[in-house]
Image (cartoon, rainbow, N blue to C red):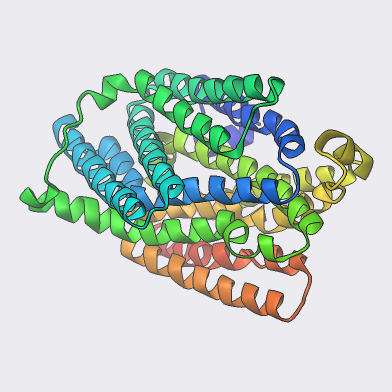
Length: 404
């Protein structure tokens, strides 16, 4: 642990924040057995679909502005950083409102509701990054934990009353994020809705960084959500249910690691300027973390099938196997996140955006070929390495040139 901590100069308050983040990520995971028993068969797949749509919309609505906010908060003076935050939030709210209005026009009212929820999630996520950048981990942790606790308890209450529906569960997720904004108020109160087109500097910063990071975010959507939206409902329900549940484990693992990187972002930025730092040592530690993720997947595979059946229901007998398969590509995930943040640090967001889109298209083409020709779903998930490798290789070469 000491060696891993030294990689990002982790201090005790960081470790406490990571522990609290782990607890907040475990809360929705604890609900999974109850939800799989409450929503059976196609209803469970429908729930995964609409939950995925909620977080896909929130990612798109954010427009990559989360990175613009975190970079500005770390680098710029406070007044300038607040201007960037206001512009970024304004852009996201306006864009999300267009989703909402269009959904109303075409009479897709539940999608309209999801659009409003996505705006709230986007706001919460962006403001929480300001707290991290200001080293206010206490506020960040309270906002995240309170969010999950409220959604957890409300869901659990209706499960006990046997009254939980898919729509209500998604409503509780959104309510949790609304509640988190209460604790983020010290940062939210400084934000004003503004017209970003009145300030050319804000246009350049918000759109220059944000737009190309939206392209990067689309590759994340493909990695985490595309299966639930495009093809899970096209395959046998038993297989789809096992894959869908396994992917929740992967979502939890990747979300936790991503949150750890956000918590450590100020220290990670410091590591980028240590030009004499051994690149080989950094890569060794990053891939060691990746192997640890795969080891966790291997442990899931060792759990007897009857345990999954007992906990989640009769249809879920291959969950551990699919978790292991999905974690194989995640050996590269810690290195991928490290170099994504490095690209943002260097302001090479155009390069990052295009390499992300190229990687996503390449993976989707390979995935389409795999599924179209009847190959095992295993290869579809293992091939996600294609999403990670080009970004890692490109920015390793850039960093190697800089530290020479």
